[in-house]
Amino acid sequence: MKPLNDKEQAILLRALEALHRTTDIVGQVVDREPAIAQDFRADARVEVKVNGQCHRYMAEIKRVDRFAILGNIRNQYRQHGDQLLLVAPRVTTEIAEKCRELDLQFIDTAGNAYLRGPGLYVLVKGQRLGEGEDFWLVEQEGKRAGTATNLRVFFALLCKPELLNAPYRDINQTAGVALGAVGWVFFGLNARGYITGGKGKGDRALLERQKLVQEWITNYPIKLRPKLNPRRFRAPATDWWKEVDITKYGAQWGAEVAAEKLTASLRPHALTIYLHKEQGQRNLTRMVAEHKLRADLQGDIEILDAFWDFKDEKPMPETVQPLLAYADLIATLDPRNLEAAKIIHERYIATTDTEA
Image (cartoon, rainbow, N blue to C red):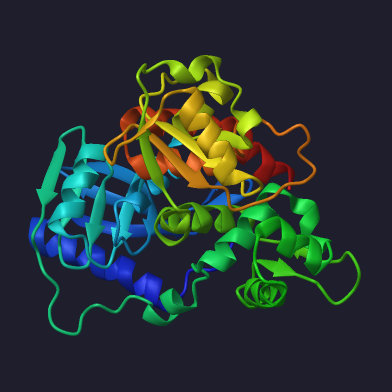
């Protein structure tokens, strides 16, 4: 876990000062980087005092510039049962409303806030930063490895840890990236403290798996997913998928159907299918014809190109990797899907993180 840096500490302190300015509520930092679980720490522990009553939170300091981040943060902390407080440089009115809908409490450096608890309810939105006050780590954002190439490689490494010390040619074939790009991805991971080793055979180790998982989940829906040639269809019957062997089309179920098959806790309303490249167009044509699918921009069936090739998965499983199903569910911000995503995380992703 990387230590809290000076600018992140400044964001936290300024947000608490702004909370006092706009609401007269006093908050203070009582601990830095407290452990929540064996492999996970919050950024800080914060206490807020109202009418003589103390409300305690685990603080997550993060820039929030898109809705998908909110569900990810919410589920990350809910699995540990701790009271979360999002601390951001700036929360827009739209994001404040989404936080309220998700019951995600927050404060920011402009004085916006949503807090609730016994004897406590605060909602402040629309406050703006003064000129030159957006002091978030712009330089770090620029260094974040959110390119499509990096995300492809990260996914391969997270799902198949043995690839961490595999030949570059194996990684490039699995992730579908240029051979020359693999070395640069590893260079970036090493520079950012996610991995160590690499000078000797088989000595490369992943140090920050949980951090890399969260970064991948946050960036995948906006940086890689839109590039997967999304197509939408509609079927004559809503339950057509129940009797389909999707693997015979060189495809796998994602998102809601994957959640239903992995957890038996969700009745799918929308269908997501990942189609592998080998004979992809021929298989798509067969699927469309055999199940009478018709193209529809508003259809509830979405078909995307698969961006990985796990040759060791023979026969092909009918669902995508839990990490991908989780990311797609989180990005919807549908409460039904968030609950299913939480189960997937507990059963598959958190277990892997602990064992890694």
